Each structure stands twice: as C-alpha cells, then as structure tokens.
Image (cartoon, rainbow, N blue to C red; front, side, top):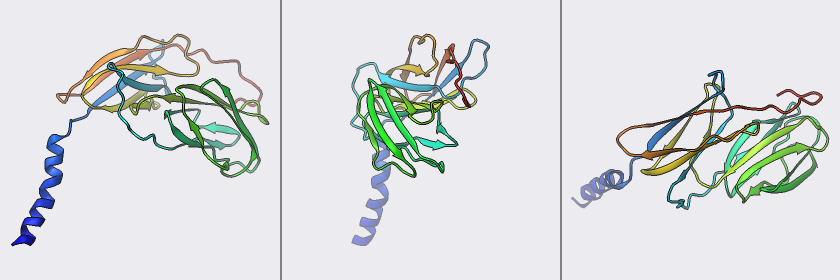
Length: 210
C-alpha cells in the first residue's frame, strides 16, 4: 500500500512542477542586408525592459584556432563565462586582446591553453594572434542568458520567459546599430523580429580567409 502511494507521488511531482512553471515563448529574429540577403554570424540578444536578470550561471564556451583562423569568427557568451582557446593547428599561436571589455594574453602555446579566460564585463572583445596578423576573431559578451547567433539563413531563435524585452543585434562589421525591437513574450504564441543591417568589411590583410 505505502509503496503504491510513494510510486504515484513520484510520478505526480514532475507534472505539478510543470503546471506551476511559466511557459517560454520562442523569439525568431531574422537579419537581412540591404539587398534582402540573409546575414549570418550576427549576435541577437534580449534584455528585459525591467532591467532585472535571473541568476543564471553562464555556460562555458570555446573559441578554436583551426587552419590559422579563429573558429567561429563570431562567438556570443554570457557575462561571467569561462572561455577556452584550443589550438588545433600543428603550430603555436599567441592569442591576445586589448579590448576594454577584456584585456588578456595567452602566450605561445599549442593544444589547449593552460586555463580558460573569464569574461566578466559586457561588450565586444576583438581577438588577435601576435604571430599571424590576419587572424581576427570576435567575442561578444552579453549580460543576460537570452542570446543566439544567426545561421546561414539569417535566423536565430531564443526562448524567452513571459515579460517585455528589448531585442538587439551586433556584428563586428556593423555600420550603424539598428534600433532595438521591443517584444512582449506571452505563452499564447511565438514572436518575430526583423532587422535590416549594413556591414562594412575592413580592408583584407595578407592571407585573409574571411
């Protein structure tokens, strides 16, 4: 008898927990260029209008070095995230950044760097290699846990709990930052946001593969 009660209680608890939890709404953002073509590798992030952020632990991230390039070219991370920089080439690299959001240096190494770098301030971080001048990569540190990056189709999705948000985009070649889009996440349906942006590519350097 008691075993049955315990078994049924164990089955009901997860269901009751779901009933009391808020339902997330999926925001699908689309980013296109002046010609209407989709723009990949654009960071999309949402901030609550209230300014209140949940105490969500940041996920660790990774920025690879492959064939003398940073991979991916653009990587969004949450503030406080620990990022590793594995060197998958058969030569050594010397990774550094002078960006205000994070200044650091990983001296000559191969394989995985000695320890991850923690990014504790929001904003863009430009990466370089002291040995290979053409190697450039970008991290974008966001304050909240709601962010993504567009794929080849220019789209990115974010699951948002109920509330009002300002949705913004970022790319290292962004000419003018577009106005944020204000959305209201409700459990009644998904959301859409669209951005049209202009990218200004910097002059190519020797061996530039971008």
